[in-house]
Image (cartoon, rainbow, N blue to C red; front, side):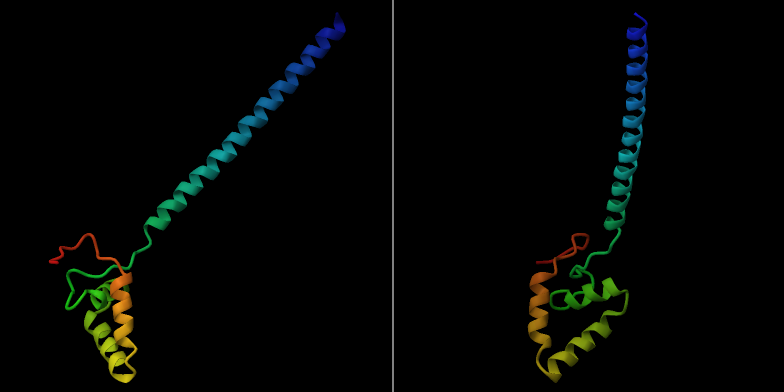
Length: 111
């Protein structure tokens, strides 16, 4: 009978220890999940490149790039005209940007 009591006590102690370990693992996993969600919020803060509906002359590409870089859109337009005049590469790049860069959903667009 004494052996059975000793065995039960050891078993109960091991089960308690196991429960504590599982609890600690759960806390560690919970912290990792919290960190992952915190990182997701960081990614949401990264600014996106959009075509501008406010600073738009043709398609809003230069205005959108200027808004993204936080500079005057005239500077971007001058660089773009320079690319068109010096080698002609500016025109195909503008068309590609027009297709690839999405409209800014926060701006009013007159299609």
